[in-house]
Amino acid sequence: MTRYPSLLQFFGGYLNEDWPDEHADEWAALDAYLRDNPHGASGFSSQIQALLAENLNDEELRRVLLHDLACAYSAEVTGWRYRDWLQALSDHAEKAIGPPQAS
Image (cartoon, rainbow, N blue to C red):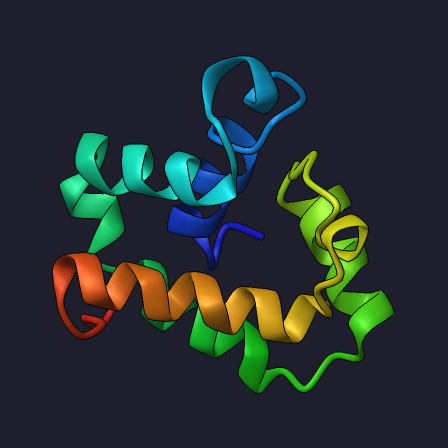
């Protein structure tokens, strides 16, 4: 998954198994990531869009997030479909830092 370094840094570093001890929710984790990593954050939304463009089904997206990107947050627990959750994360990041940049 090295083609998605910003996603690996966010999901593996900010939504890892300790995320509930460090952040109130996934949105607070994303805000911290965007603040702490301005260079990586610039490619975050474009990398999400590239992942979504792979047209993986929800189970495949779940596998990529939990296994390949080391994410310890299960979006379905809070009622999200992974595709929708990823799009919402991308939208949140764009509002915070502006439109996606090429990674």
